Amino acid sequence: MLRAGTSSSVRSCLARGKGTAQALRTCLQERCATSQKRRANAIAERSLHSTIFSRPASSATALSRPQPPAPQHEQPPHVLKPSLDLPISSIDERKVAVGWDTGTWSRYHHVWLRDHCRCPECFHPITKQRLLNTFDIPPDIKPVQVTSKSEGLEVKWPSSQPHTSLYPWSWLRQNSYDPPLAPPQTIENILWGSKIQQAPPTVLYEDIMAGDEGLFKWLSSVDHFGFCFVTGVPPTAEATEELVNRVAFIRETQYGRFWDFTSDLAKGDTAYTTMALGAHTDTTYFTDPCGLQLFHLLEHSNGTGGATLLVDGFYVASILKELHPSAYEILSRVPVPAHAAGEPSALFTPAPKTGYPVLRHQDGELFQVRWNNDDRSVMRGLEPALVEEWYDAIRKWHKLLTSADSEYWVQLSPGTAVLVDNHRVLHGRSAFTGKRRMCGAYLGMDEYRSKLAVLTEKYMPSALESEFAQQSSVNGRSIWNPLL
Ligand SMILES: C[N+](C)(C)CCCC[C@H](N)C(=O)O
Ligand SMILES: O=C(O)CCC(=O)C(=O)O
Image (cartoon, rainbow, N blue to C red):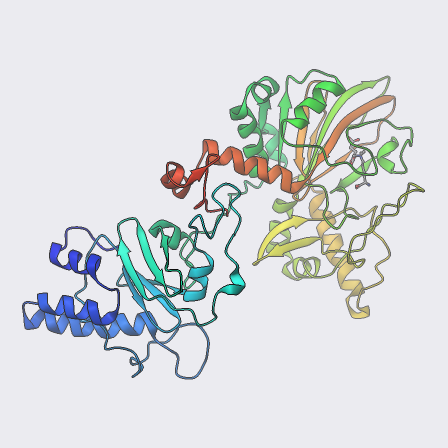
């Protein structure tokens, strides 16, 4: 944005300006008073135009090195270093440029702007779905006029039915892609090791059941830590199911909807035994492993053991990356097949069958840990030269997973449930004797993230959401919501 307090004549010029370099230049030239300003303009115009629309001499890549203005462009505007409170907008053959300040420009392809019109004709105000037929947009579409207005960039499109689009400035800035300007929407993961036992994230059952604020606190904790306890839960399966349903509908699997299990091999899985289970994530044999899982120990009598293990997979991965980068790299690349074949009526393997790497990334960011050595299938896809390196890598991974620094052991008891992000935190248990009854359920990752997004809109809206909460909001959600 350009500083406020500039001469009103320049401001009015821009507000009236056709947005083309010609109009801008003429208008500003009339107002340039001294040769000093003209020299400043000449410097500003060269840098401005080459900044806005420079074309690398040969490559078709995005705008990069400044080039002398191409002859076919109109003469660039004689531009003061303007300090308006409105961004400057300008058009060339393929794009509209918006100048936030003379050092910061965004370029939007004409076709991109037309496709993203959010007027009620082009974008359903209630369903937030595109109504415009993207494929009716002529590939060479070009605005007949762009105007910088206080409420945003106004674009008039050529068509038999005149169409005008308005893009709020903060929405344009948030969605700037050339260059990207919005800070990445990442939550800060709070990585932890065994010391988390000093102050584990915990929320009261009654707060969660009382209203959305308590629910938001719970899910925000899971979002930051990858798990969160709930205390004061009535020690019944019914109350536990009600608690899970505060988040979303349960994700049903071959183990049923709401599970209530003990060591009777009721299902063909070692979870239904008294065996110890090493740190793992569940359902690695699904293409899309379950997102969250809730555990609530309802009973453990006449026996010992059965402690719960939690390990922050993101924390351990960060240590592996630091200490053994080549092991980290191989675990991020080599797919691991998995299966669930303990029930005669079910044989689950992921698609593709080769499975997925232990550490999955998006844009270089670790976003999922997928590890269950018991459920791992034959490593049939390993390149021969990689076999020993891969086993060496999982040894290093296992050593860190099982270190005293990583393992958080906690003895659950009736009344305390724990919700775990199954894409980040590994869980397990120690062997046990006696009668032990555990209940809980899986939730889908998308259902959890949707609930968290709705609660975040309500309790911690982004600046953009707050700005638009009043306007263009139907059903309480703005068409300019940054998540759409
Ligand atoms: C949670 N519940 C006991 C119902 C099922 C446990 C399934 C465990 C399976 N080996 C996996 O890792 O997915
Ligand atoms: O019994 C427990 O405490 C946990 C069992 C388990 O790891 C699982 O169900 O995935």
